[in-house]
Length: 485
Image (cartoon, rainbow, N blue to C red; front, side, top):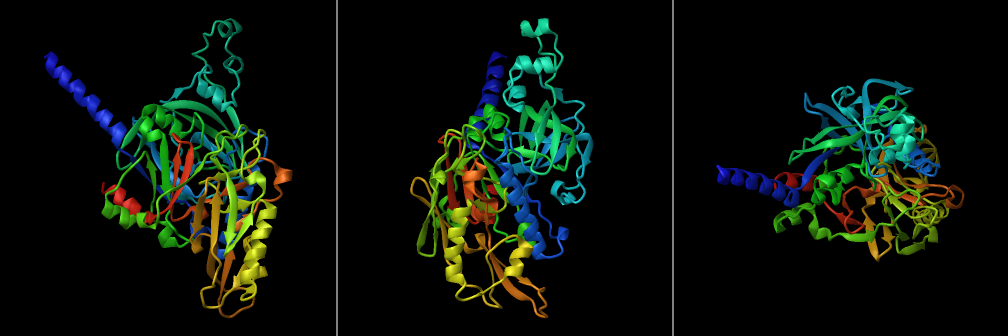
């Protein structure tokens, strides 16, 4: 009897050990954008560029967890088990909290804020069976910008004599307020099981999340992947360090094409390996990872900040301001690698230098499309008739001698436009990098690397070695290959 029990115990232990140390969790990222929301390509680009600018400029407000409205990619989970309730959340490396609307849910001024396809038409979950988080919990302190447990328990109406004897564990963490670029919410912390319907199904017990019953302009929740104790990777690391110490994603190149947008982009939790044949198939022959160190930000510790040393346009390397190469003691500087911002935002001086060089090469050959620039919020734009424009190469140079050469479609988008009094649609292209304003006036991160520029790369966040890596990949084939492991 004892030997049978020992055998059963060892089987369970080894199964868990093998899973934790060798397996990955593969999740599909779904692009949330639907062209049915927009009456033209310039309308789509105007919406997307405005959202990128709003998200970037909101980062410079004096708040601790700057979540911003929307994202481009969603993840699906199941909450609880009696029965499991499906939820769909935006995936965001720029914040460190998992939160979502809970029933009953009231969203003020949410008309037209998003396409219901982003959440698959799901209703907010009911959390009656979820456990509340104590006011004494470190998670409560983290959600309230590191307020002391005594302050939080006083807010939760725990009597003074119990606060003094540290006996307030039965009092729930008080609600917290989050402000956004164009919205806000009030939420409470709860714990429940969170399951991931992945290639290797995984259940996280006692997972901490924020539950919002009221929001202003924020109809969809967020799965925060930033550097913080409440983020999904941090909570996953407490279950399995192997899974939580590294994650990567590979965004399928889409250029807003509806068929490509529908392809799942792989989100990979943990480290993986492929045989030589599969490596060649998914694009390992295009080069291995180039890494740059993560920079610690004392004011915004949840950001994945890196240093940018220069940008090359054609054969000319454009120097960058010193503030882009490092983060100072006040949390200013560096570039944030962000899954939630669409277009890369650059400091005004650098952006203008880049545009001057770009226009020097393009403006001699192609007519400037100024009306398109006004309608899209992007620029410079050029008419190229029916031919593909000859566009100068663009490369990003990160601190640590790490160079990332951007594919043409990652920074120059071409489409046909039928307005401007033309009977025939004209081919036009726009630079997909944006002016982030004067860094000296704004403070905070100096730039953001948007997800549009990350398409066709596997971007790895190595939390153990504190670095971010980039490697060209065929992302759709990487998804297929990892599913077949």
